[in-house]
Length: 78
Image (cartoon, rainbow, N blue to C red):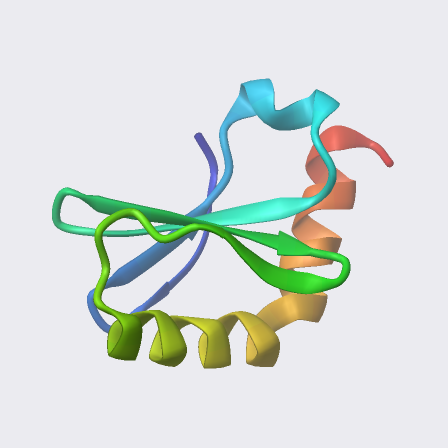
């Protein structure tokens, strides 16, 4: 599972088996993992993060979306 970015306590990544899904990014901190679709950006799974933390994470996803899309396309060849 390639790590695309680390910001503070968050690791942004995707799984090699995610190829058949639309572009998205997973984010983890400790044992919590959320999932965001990238086009358009929206929360798919909150992974037990609080609403406030999801808001902060979504800001990071918005900020780094071009990087996530480029990594997705490079890895999966889309």
